[in-house]
Length: 273
Length: 143
Image 1 (cartoon, each protein chain N blue to C red):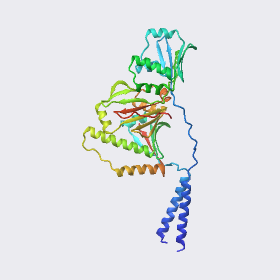
Image 2: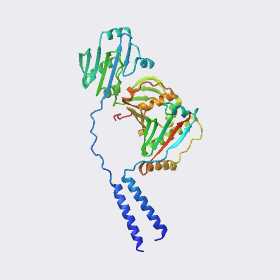
Image 3: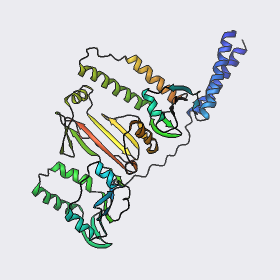
């Protein structure tokens, strides 16, 4: 009779001790993540050209790789102009546009809100640029860091640097037609695919690529995060004979897209790591 | 106290103490023996396994939330999941499966069992939060 309470006491003591141990949370870093400023859309493109062979390399892709994906070739008039220059740099950053030629400052333009409005008005005169498109243009250009460098050189251009915080808005109409940022692409999904999407009740997708890490949300619900390794991708490349080429520029970039099907609301948010 | 109850209590205490130690150690992943799997020439997997010259591919399931494919110590792809994202994937997969059957007009649209769904989610959550294992399958290509 005396031993039973001892066991129960012991059991209770063990449960109590373990309970305290388990309830205690490990010391966690509670420092708030420093809030970033408004995310910037960064695009740095390096282009090297050789007027002798009339070939160019862009964003780390060789002339041959660009030809394979159908990149346009420059006309002779353009080659004549380029052969007279050693380098040209266009920079859009903060509220200024700067153009440099042969390391000399050629011109600077104001690129603040009012000056962009003038540009939109000018564009409005030639193409129908609705209010929504202006909103989108502001989403892209309000905080932009764009640098395009043209260099006369035979060497391979530097890898493309793309870090886009703004989501590329892709819309699939009810008839399957695909448009990007309001511009029709001429491509469309098959009726079978549309029927499948409709039956599965998929309304929107949010896809973010961040240097090999893929985050996907379907109807706002997050799916497991996938990480593709550049070295490992060569295994898949060899196995399936995909001839993917050098993917260094892609693995150094981050961007995302919001896809809306039918009349659902646009995907909001950003793709910042 | 009857012997049965005494044994049960002692066992329970031992289990609790062991789990307490496991928990205080940070719930480390317990590695299970690797399962070997051989693929013969001609099988679809053979081309993938032999593509990098190592003739080996390792699929690792870490129940703390990582599924990884490695080839000759080089990571190919990794999936990081949580019980929530796993449930979302199951939900999407089920909807796509039903949609495919509906579009193809198969008639036999599979009915999902809420109990089975919950059971799967519980199992995933248990091995994610409570006890964590690492299970590997080593796929070797035969010459």
